Image 1 (tube, rainbow, N blue to C red):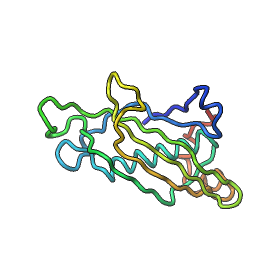
Image 2 (spheres, rainbow, N blue to C red):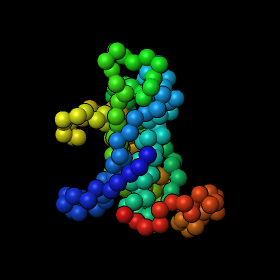
Image 3 (spheres, helix red, strand yellow):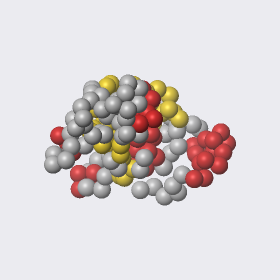
Image 4 (cartoon, rainbow, N blue to C red):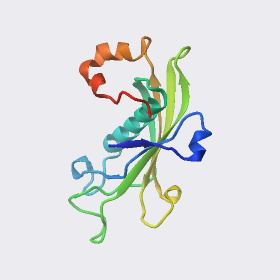
Length: 165
């Protein structure tokens, strides 16, 4: 998944910028029922990853997920699934967006991000696209910041983008 931070005039007035994924299809290997994306597996990953990148783009901080809740609203068709809902069905194109609600680097070391995943529909305003799921992700920002996570995660930290957006 690739992400971009919102750069509109409205974003400039917010404490934290909203981060959006680029549109993508759910691959068939993430299906549970034939042709339908697995809710917890596929969307758990999407919600968690989108929330993390929102935190990282807004603060430059690395963190670990402590809890996550997801509310599912509708099924999503996968790309190349064994059986789609109808012969004319095509795979769903989804977009995830996240807003950082809480960030306390000093006292509680906690961050919370809210995520909305929508099914893209051609010709409609993105805010009118149907909601697939919503999620809330809580993070712990460890003492010592990024250097303490680097001791745990090793070289993977070196591959993260260096500059804040």
